Amino acid sequence: MIEINRIRENKDEIIEKLKKRNFDAEPIVSEILSLDQEWRSAKQKKDDVCQEMNSIAKEIGQLFKAGNTEEGNAKKARATELKEVDKDLKDEVDNLADKIQQSLYELPNVPNEEVPAGGTEEDNVVVSTHGELPDMDAEALPHWEITKKYDLIDFELGVKVTGAGFPIYKNKGARLLRGLINFFLDEANKAGYTEFVPPLMVNEASGYGTGQLPDKEGQMYHVTEDDLYLIPTAEVPLTNMFRDVILNESDFPICVTGYTPCFRREAGSYGSDVRGLNRLHQFDKVEIVRVEHPDKSYEALDGMVKHVASLLEKLELPYRILRLCGGDLGFTSAITYDFEVYSAAQKKWLEVSSVSNFETFQANRLKLRYKDANKKKALVHTLNGSALALPRIMAALLENNQSENGVIMPAAIHNYIGFEKIA
Image: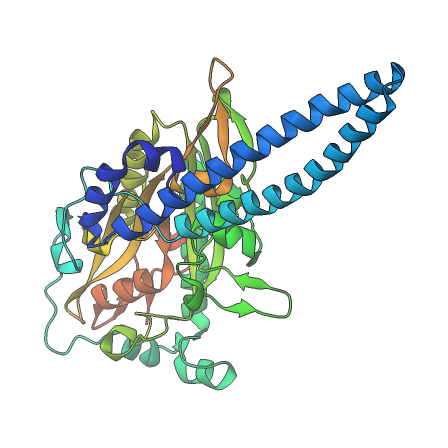
């Protein structure tokens, strides 16, 4: 959430920068500033009333003590009147504050200067490409055929048990999934991330804290009776662990990681993009999250990008890094780098990770601050990244490494999965 002080001081700059997202912020920003003016006026009135009440309270005792009963009773009557005025003003102040908050929730984050302008994923910038693309013959199988051939995943059984988008992993498919999870967690631990096992459901406050609510409310599974949400990513519970926390400068950097299943409704998804493991309602992911001093967050972002790149290199997968344009940028992000691996049989790039810096946007919602050397409180920066999302990694491993003798697994995970090839 953009800080109200920033909007007061930099209205035109914020409106202009949000145009990078193809977002017309002028109506909302104008409404926020108008409500803010009303709020400040009402707040001043309330403060004046409180000041008068405090002054009268001191006078009343002195008047009665001096025997001035008539004036003392008049002051008491005025105090009673002011209490009603104060109550009405408090309701007005609280109501205006709520309206401002709701309007602020509608504004996406301001893109970083390095974010390119653009409306769709076609305008994303390829920063770098790594590895050679596999040259597969025309008979190469897509992963959904490979999983059927070697009895690795049962998509139809998942439909029977739950519905489309909930596959059942089995045999070496299950071992490959479990092995990759452990591999990613161990690599995160080596890189200095502390491992957590967070809840798979969060409350509404957590959804608002990291920005999934109200922006993506329709994409989250909602347990209405208990008003809980199934997590779309471990980012939500891991980051919300620090909600309403005040840190010291000595606490930085804070680096955490966690594995969770993730749940997304993916309403409106259709076509070849949802085939097999390409797009699921339940999938597994290892997440890395950082809470950083504002002066260090972009250095931390570079480190996260290098960490994800190292995972893909150890898996021997060709990949590319994209800097997302304004129109493709997530609601809460100031800048995002996407990682895509090449799918040989499908002959296309598949997104497997997004690494983002949210700057103060989430911290403002979370009320997550730190004390600087002068004991002054300021908002931190938060970051997160997938390291990595499992389904498309598995799809690329199966498709890119298929041969006449089976599917050859990269050496880095042999000890994790207990086999060198699927045959």
